[in-house]
Picture 1 (tube, one colour):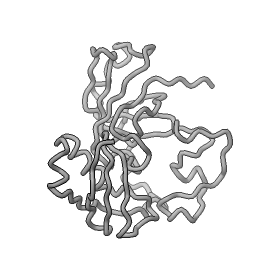
Picture 2: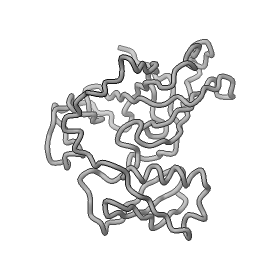
Picture 3: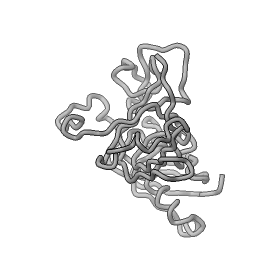
Picture 4: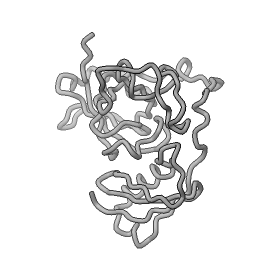
Length: 224
């Protein structure tokens, strides 16, 4: 099967640490830029009528020649194995991801051709996209579905505190994105040491923080 890359995503997630665990958790804007072959306005006709879309994409940072039938889901502490098909692990027979995102707007005539702006993506900057499909609520949404072991993840958002002495040097549009991502608790599910300082990259900044599982406090923000 010949799978073509049709686009790549552009956003502030420059490394895996800090990327939301699932799509829709963090309201961060991303831009989808298409490969030259697919910069055809007619290909997007009718898409403006949909509020959400599905992104099919490649786990480009987790490509492997071999696969294993079981993986260690982080939300189970990284110590228990589950079948790969019961997880959303990137280490799969085919390294394909699936995410539902909000379609904020479409710009058909830009120097880069048609561009999509979406919110809620859980993809790193530069991730290859292999297809886009409209999200249909009447068939794609199942409110009574069971979440299995995935419901053991941390619930709720953290309160994010950034001292004014740090916040004053950060552009407002970046500051809101930083708070949004941090409120989701980017730490691995199995790490909860209150005195440990974590560092993540986002939007050209290196952000250091610690948390007591209720309040996340930023200790430093510096340009990458």
